[in-house]
Length: 153
Image (cartoon, rainbow, N blue to C red):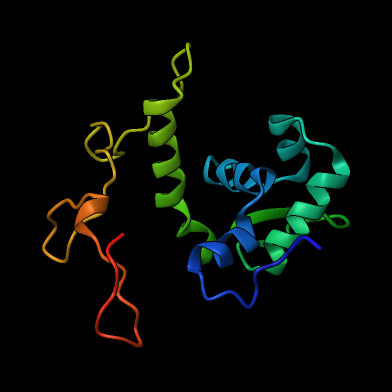
């Protein structure tokens, strides 16, 4: 039987994918980062089926990536807003964008993300040591918290 959830996994990546790992969920989070808040706007921007959108929004709310806010003046109208947990996905989304722009570029220019204060383009994200020196995968080792000797990546 195929495994469907990773709640009890020791792997942090698997646990992250458990909450936001399917592509619809990440695209919803991305749209929320762009400022989309209303159900109808998510549907319009993504072209997603209503049942899938409802399921993913419910799951993102349940996992505290989004919160559902009642903003109705006359009756109920809801908006979906990123939580701190959802906003913390920003570097992951940017890293995925940058990876795709390098390895799977779109023939037409995409969005140009820039620093709001300076107008300058974003720097390529990278893994850094504690002093800010960029590290490659060959310079990182997996440190098992329970043992002194750990294999290299």
